[in-house]
View 1 (cartoon, rainbow, N blue to C red):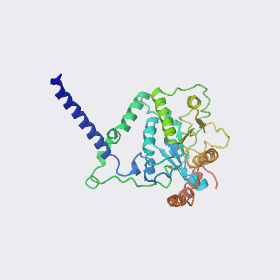
View 2 (cartoon, rainbow, N blue to C red):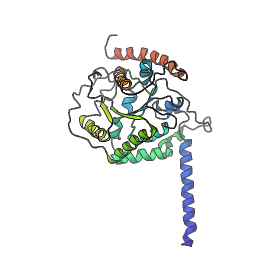
View 3 (tube, rainbow, N blue to C red):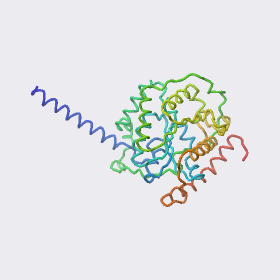
View 4 (tube, rainbow, N blue to C red):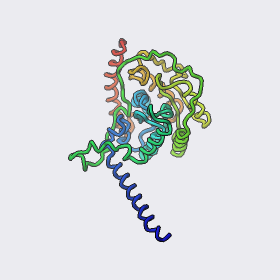
Length: 331
């Protein structure tokens, strides 16, 4: 046994040194700016002042283009952020939420349920879980391609994560390509939530409870990726855990009034700015009626938000007419 002790210690020391190198290299290869963390604008939340976000939306890509937090601020003074990216998963959401809690303490976390069934086409749900979890735990796996971006100018440049997104994670789309596939919510079956996904959903629920955030589950309208069997899977999960769930594909209060002929840029996968304004308005009404959310307009410490509100108005003054023109609508 003594003869084995030396080699075993050397192997353990080597593994620990290798792990440290992997972690340090992964951290070094992270994008130099938070503007490019996700390919979308989710990383802008890292540039916000501490504890200024009251509503955090964790989303798939269709909600990054479908929920516009600055409209909440403009109408009610609610400070919100839409944190989303393509191929976002429950596993991504859990680890990002943990990171966000180090800087923000949202009163409400809105979890968009498309991520529950998220996986790339050729993957199994188990493959998706392994790939996403390993990428979160080991940034080198997630950012390994970033070595191609290194050059003499940025090789030793420190990371700067101070960039702020005036749209708060929302990416307005102005194109129009209608959906004509008919009713996509007719299926009355129930699609089971994969086991590992359910375990991480439970971790998100507990994390929100531990941090004092109220958790709201919603589904953003998506004609090409959602159906009633998925709705029933989420509804069963929400009922079992006493969570509130709103599926806007069903337009439960009859307030959304989505028009699939004009409110989508890509035949039903996402919402354009016309659909996003409708969804954002209805969700904002629900938030104000059901949660204690302060009005920060004009409040000291939120001057940036008042500036961003003016930028938001300018953006919408251009985006909405462009979308209406693409839809053949008169203003």
